[in-house]
Length: 196
Image 1 (tube, rainbow, N blue to C red):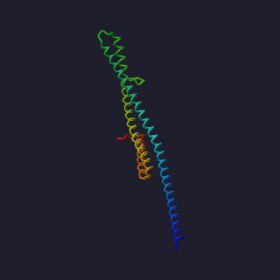
Image 2 (image 1 turned 135 degrees about the vertical axis):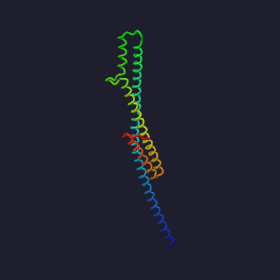
Image 3 (image 1 turned 180 degrees about the vertical axis):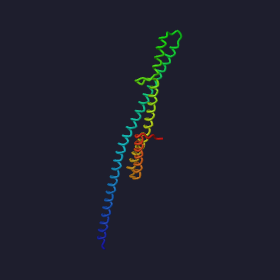
Image 4 (image 1 turned 90 degrees about the horizontal axis):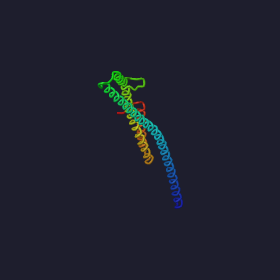
């Protein structure tokens, strides 16, 4: 074989090698783009789920606060009625009070403690306040359940960002599992399961 033929064969081999390398590079870039596209779609999906869970958490917090305010209002109204009842009972025991005035004050004191149609009897107010306080506690616990789900989804989104940089399928799987746990926590909270 002559030197010119050898040179030509070497040039052809180099060109083939470069063509294979370029094809492999294009294939690698295409796979990388495809991987990042799928990870980006997952980021979007997890962000939507995070927004939904966040809305549920904010709603539970708002309901907890409103129920707490209502309970506080009812207990304050009940205490005001108890003070008024005590004042009337004390006044009715004062010496030298006319019989009719004494009877009116005793009657008014008794009426304050009795259940009424509006639900403003002392016992009724206490029962309503207790129920509202319980509702406030339940919604606060639900808010915590939603917040755990939110946190899991936030960490999953961060992991997806790391996966897009490192091109790691394992990190994507971990992010998916974590996001699934977050969604499950939110769903359990939505159906009323209280977390320990």
